[in-house]
Image (cartoon, rainbow, N blue to C red; front, side):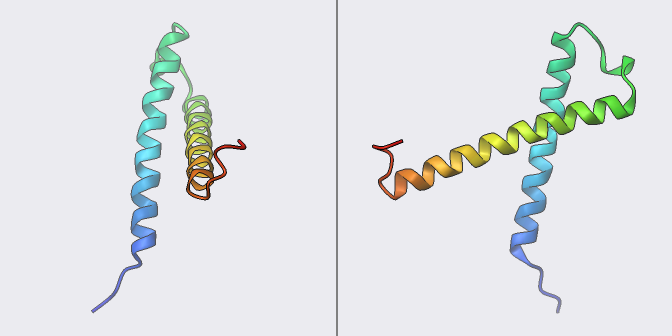
Length: 78
């Protein structure tokens, strides 16, 4: 019987959700720019999705740090 690492499983699921959200945000960004995703090269699409992934990860990290500060009672000074 082979055991799987639950942390890797959670990490993969989180990466998948972040990727899906980034693709949706990238599509919205492209539409707001007045273009269609079909008009862009695959490399350009990948760059836009990567930027959106970085934004999402940044927001997650920021919220995580604020949650830790709140748990430690540091919310009054931030």
